[in-house]
Amino acid sequence: MDGVKMQRGAPKSGWGNHKPVRLVFERTTQQQRPTPTGGNTDKKKPDRTLVVLCWMIGVIVLGCGLLGALVDSDSNDAGTLQATTTTSPPDPRTLPVFVGSVVAVSRTDITLQSGTRQLKVKWARLNHGGLCGRELYPAVEASLQAMVPIGALVTVVREPAGSTPAGLSEYGYIHVAEPGTQATMQPVGVSINEQIVAQGNSSIQPEIDRRDGAVPVAAQVEAARAEIPAEYLAAFDALVSANNAAWDGRLGALALCRDRLDREKADRIRWWGLDEKPGTDDDPSRHVPSISGDSSGNGGGGGESRFCRKRWWC
Image (tube, rainbow, N blue to C red):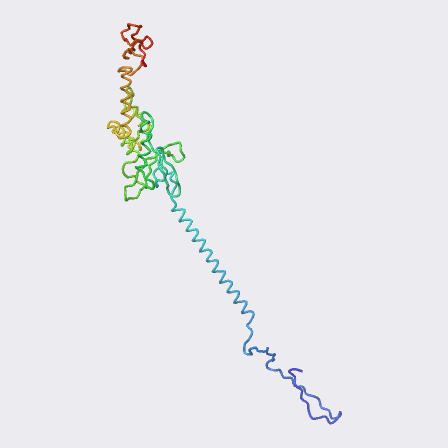
């Protein structure tokens, strides 16, 4: 038996001389186990409890790191979103004044890029129709495109209009930044609207009736001013002054218009007299030669035709 030693007394001398056997039990100090072939007898197997504890600590540390990274990422994303929200430009459609770059120009409007939004603004108070429309229509667009090149930076001052949600209209005054400068929210210099009117290549809206017998120009201007908000009267007055100067000075397309109007007036006077109206007493007489060629009426009943008497078209 392992761990137990048996000691006996003197040898047997027979059953009658038998002595009791004394058993001595000795505990071996260490139970020997077989050593695997090729194994290291000095290496001990690690404690399972210690291994599990190390794994748990590692998992906790890794989880804390991932959680911190996620929280930090969320914080950065929130900060970026907040920064984007606070720094994004406002909608130019809701602003009375805004800055943009020119995309396209026509006689009726100008297309602008402002931030991420593209929009059209109509030219405030410009008029290329009416009495001088024949001359103004082809001139106004060419002049505007020459004055406002594509890509130019401009400041737009919108006119008010109570019918829109933002209280603004589709019309505006366009100010081009000086060469080498940036357009700002503070308009600089004379608007393009005023410049083209001063050149005589556009009229104004409402149109001033300059025909003979029309209401005096001053009265027409006062009636128009009564419909314009006070803060925009200065811009309108500047347009009126520029239009008057271009008309009186025969500038640009208005010069061609006035030349045509003068020719038409001369024709009316020649046909209808000084009052320029047909069928009145001052209409010039029309004498049509007779068929024989004798305007005196001899030889075939010539003289003035009864059909043409007092008829302006004869």
